[in-house]
Structure formats: structure tokens, C-alpha cells
Length: 193
Image (cartoon, rainbow, N blue to C red; front, side):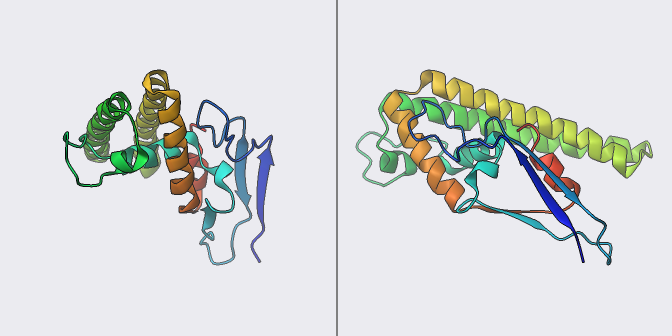
């Protein structure tokens, strides 16, 4: 039988509804530990946003938000319903989000290319799989910090009403999300918190 322990220290409230910031996971420390399973395969761990939204790291929440938003603002007089029109954001708020979505999309493309070339270079130089994993993890961390920087810029430029509407969208996205993690992926998922 597999022994699994979840250690959570100082978990914050899942979502602070009246906070000026979206903070679903601040001041929390989470660690998975597990005994070696008898068949050599660890069981997947599931984080269910409808039950434990506070377990999602900020970078993941903001990645979901940025991926859910359109790359372009709706044209003036356009009757098509877009995510932006459903949120009821001001033109200024929409421009802020469109700008950050474009930056995010470029960062995602750059990350993909950097991982591909780093992996190829390290494989060609006969580095271990562990070295390759560590190098690609460092690239992923840089990407995650860029997402958190986008979060800061968005909060700086968004109106208070726009921030509230974005928080509501985040609540919906998190509540409808389940993440399955296995082994080392669980540890890496929570960095940066």
C-alpha cells in the first residue's frame, strides 16, 4: 500500500474576494512526499479547483487567465460576443489585457524554441536526462516569472472594476480545473509558488 502525505503550512484563504489582487495561493507552502509504490509507478495526485483552489500556484492561474483571453480587442461596433465583451471591461482595460496577452504569446513561443534548442544541444553533448530536465526546468521558471511580471503590470494598469471582473473570471477558471501530477512534476508545479 502506498503512503502519501500532504503537508500544507500556513495556507491562505482560497480567494480573498475583496482583495485588490488575485491571490489564490499566497503565503502557502506545499510539499508532496510519498513512499515508494510497490509497482514502481507513483499514483497521480489531483488538485481539484472546485475543492482546493488555494493549491494552485499564482503562475498557473495567470497562465490560464492569459490563455483564455483573446489576442485582439473587439472592433468598434462589432456585435460578435467575445470574452472581453462578456467581461464588460473598459476600452482601456481591454487594451491593457490585449497588450499582455500578446507579450505572453511571444514568451510562450520563445520558451518552446528555447526548450527545443537546449534539449537538442544537451542531447548532442551527451548530457544526462537529469541535466536536461534541470536545464529545461530553469527555462520554465524564467517563463513563469514573466507571467508573474505580467500580473504585476496588469494590476498596475487595470481599473479597480476591471480587476474585479478579472478575479471573477479567475474563480471560474480555477473552479473548473483539475491538475493531475505524478512524482517530480508535483514538486516542480509549485515553483515559483
